[in-house]
Image (cartoon, helix red, strand yellow):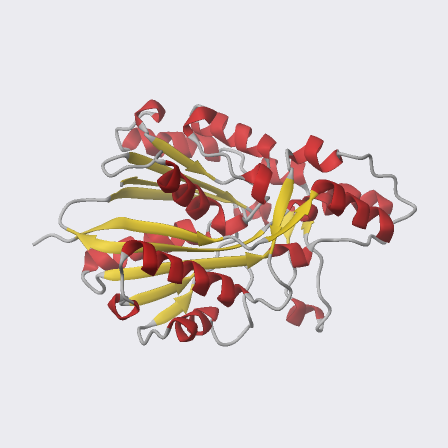
Length: 331
């Protein structure tokens, strides 16, 4: 019998902490008295109102594990039912072992685990891997987890005022944990996926590994114009992939797309050819939650009734590197 895979459920853990744009801007000014920062610049440039902030003592594994517990409770899945756990976050508890082990230990799981990383497309790639594993018959139930504590990478102090535009995006990130359950199914749930890369554009957005910098923490640096340019040619490829699947943008009941800012979200919608009304806007009140962005949109759509069984969903990812991807599924 042919085995297919399907997305069974998605859940998130949203930290209770909040930081408004005014609070972020005030802190930045206090650390850089010689730099003029116009009030409301974060809202004007990125469309941000406030961002989520995790407690200082919580690690990515804590956020991911809590999101998984939420999923177990909501979906009625027992931890012992999971055959494989993946962790797809950008940030991790430590370099070794894989953070997936830490998440699994906190959940009491005894299944195989491993980490998978590809900037903000980590979860999308993890779903691709989960689909392949399930269709091959190796596993029947895979839990994809992720978490970010990106606010800790905010650049509050600058050595050079000319670097301010590269630092401001770090003030728009948000913390969160997510979990997505992928299960074996008798009919196709995940209909297909396609991924593309322009690796020559990797320098547009970087967070250096501290171990490679002799234990000196690197700074998150994002050149927004260079980052957008690094996606050259990808929009056409993504639209072409959608066409190859025989799907038009208007056929999609829900569109989940990476949201690093309101402006970029609009650009990405135009790239894909979808109406912004087809998406669930999450950036303004959460910030750029990186790998959590797609699970957050799925979860929000589920809780608000915008996503129902049988709906056709398009998941679109754009990440530094640069990489882009598309995964189609019938919910």
